Length: 167
Image (cartoon, rainbow, N blue to C red; front, side, top):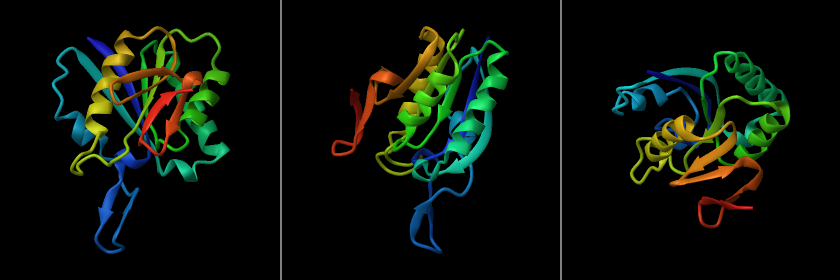
């Protein structure tokens, strides 16, 4: 059985609609509920909620917190998937790439343009693809979105088309 670590940092993938405020916001982790919908008989997913932030609100201190948690998990020798807001996903990914020069496992960042549970959400697809990619990719830092895999240094968000493209 393959172990994969899933670190949740928030972002659109985990946003919920607040009836009180009338806006979509990060309130609580919900990835584990969606993991239970997937059929992963030969994978052991260890999910960990690290923070719940919109990526536009992520600070350098938050990226250091992500890096430190990843560093602690790398000793386990298992792939790591990080759910992250798409606006600064590349920035965090490049920070991780600069922090870890001799990776033995892949680190995959993913997220969503539309929150999990919303009509037309890409979140479950991206999460599923990321879990598969983490099992197949060579060591390195990647972004997996919309059926594509990008080395983090070659990815950029195309806001006009709500996707990622080659940089």
